[in-house]
Image (cartoon, rainbow, N blue to C red; front, top):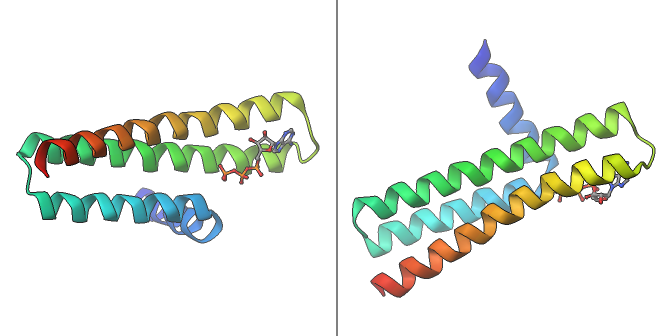
Length: 109
Ligand SMILES: Nc1ncnc2c1ncn2[C@@H]1O[C@H](COP(=O)(O)OP(=O)(O)OP(=O)(O)O)[C@@H](O)[C@H]1O
């Protein structure tokens, strides 16, 4: 079952990757902030989309790391490039989330 495989992926990322657990906790903190500030619905949509993008990027990052480590356990500059770019994707989205949080606090506090 497709959903079963996806849930297995979520469970694996949660148990293996501390960065995924950190991102999930940050997402929960963002939801608490939304409930506390009660901003207009567009802000809820923006925050939910950014949360989904970050968690999805983190899952792709985890998938790529595990695939690379399995297929090529030795050090290689191309593996470094692939892993660094995947990590950079998560960083870019995390910076967008920080900017969005700052804007929301500035607007509604
Ligand atoms: N096989 C490799 N060859 C070359 N460089 C590597 C290799 N594996 C890891 N690196 C370098 O080490 C960094 C960390 O890789 P690692 O697989 O340990 O990820 P991680 O520390 O688990 O990252 P994350 O916190 O995103 O899960 C990579 O971004 C890359 O620069």
